[in-house]
Image 1 (cartoon, rainbow, N blue to C red):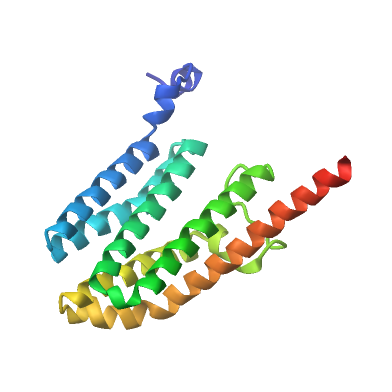
Image 2: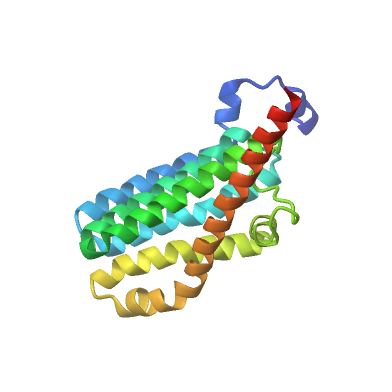
Length: 217
């Protein structure tokens, strides 16, 4: 079938669900679940491989969305939800390995979920087609983070590597565990600062929208 015929095809909801980047998204979920299972059975190497594959596919689904012009709202939300669920689930397991830091783990999960949810909700409520369309006037740091694919990829990758390294440190891995924790720590801290700024910026957007609505009454 030619490209013109494919473009003329009437799309259905099922076609959206079967877009290539969304199929990659489903495989991300599968590998994440496999990593959770191997965590339970205390298999750090297998866990790291499955979790790592799930994380690396995050870059592939974005590439596929751009290459095949298959970017969708569903895919964007699926991508973010998968990221948040995977990271939160790993942190939950870390709270079992390092129970003395339970409050820190709880705060990290809360910051991660709240900042990303409020950011996406605020951007969509403001009429943006993507949560990544952050204007520099809103936040120069967030604009750099979301619009520069290299920065976004590196920060997200190192953030996940930090948590995996903390996980491997428990099992006495030095190079991939203890050493990697210290290497990843600065960028991991940057990600937490970005989350705080993201939460603040989203709150300001929503509050301004509330103020504008009240002025119109």
